[in-house]
Image: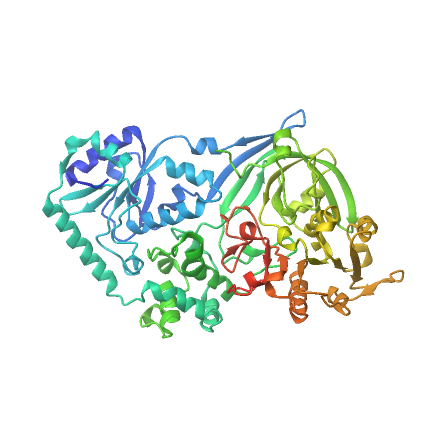
Length: 358
Length: 274
């Protein structure tokens, strides 16, 4: 379904207001800390002007940091009952607005991970009840490298509608039947896009892509090979020593999805919850088994696990790498480790040029 | 869509002491329909819930021919096993699974089989041994090499006499005691006089990582090709479905693609598991 319209910026608020009548709205909100995706109660909270990406990816709305999976309860008779909390997850329709291509690609990675031989019903339920309104990227940030991984600044699929900011108006690309329905009942707010609108959008996106590409990063094709050859290279010792194993890169990553499962008993000990909680491959406890054995004890081995999962193992697992080039892990790293420097070093065997980052 | 994270309710039917801090729990799934459709192949595992303590993976140790219930052998080690050891017969637990890929029984048919186990690592091999005994004519020479820390730590003690009627069983302990007349030393001492009689031999093993490391090298040195050396890997398998990422080894999900692998599969892993 390829269909292009435009909407004046002045009418966007009305559109969102109408959407909010039928859906819970999630959108970028500007806060003191930066721009975050949040549930919206009024259209004026929505900020579609943000540069690059939000502080956290929209992952948490599909795969929350703590997922309550079910409740168990001993009855007075001594029997035990389980209450599946999945039923709650499936309720209500949502629209998430203003998702950048890198983050849409992040969701597409999670889609592949969480479906297949088994389906993760919590993730799948949330994905099914949420429409995605994308927003192409006009102003990348310092550490953005999506263009290298073909994950931005624009995107061809994974959205119900896709907005592109042309100053006084948005070009609106309809990407699905659901997206068309969103537009169709509000056609008074939209106009058919003209050829110029579409050309202007293309020009803008090409320019953004060129900006990102001027950073001189390696080609995607060389990354896997470089990493495979250098699994035992000494550079991992260097990075492993720098890494604080804090897990910030995992928790801000749009595709990191490792978790642990545990029980939270209530004080009466007769009932409680099973929860799944975000985990990090950088934590020592991540691979620990009951006997106390830890399979990735030294820090370089844990540092490598994230890099190799993203750029090597994912190719076999889901058919593509699982880094989307958003650059969040670079921004938040307290040790100032830049994943692209790592990849550059491995791929070319040269020290990164951006010494200021080190 | 049924929720694969929701455990099936089950009851502990019986508890048997195996060794210090080690017990075998016989578990019966309550729902008859689910119980009847619970089929597993030797080497597969389940996720057992002890409500309030959480969930952990355990190998199924009972014969695959028994459908009324199944058993797991557990050493008290972590949080879930601590909770499990507090339970009594008739108490509730939860079960998910079975999960994973078991031993390559079809390939092993018509061949010699060498089973090597260390400590509680005999647990996932017991259903295989029982399968072989029930279908004895389908296999040639079958040998079990089993090593435990001390004679007390030997599990399934009362099974060996029966097994010896059908297969060779050789035991060794790391620390012999006065009344121990058998071998002593690590399980590799049992290889001293062992030479495979032909190329038609499969080896299967489970034990501590250090044991599997040396046994694998021993087997290679006596000429077993890597694709005939199988082992079961122990990893932190939380979800059993390849989602949680915790069991990933060399890019493979031990829960889904294993826990049984052959040496030819893993020796090219970037991260070597044995």
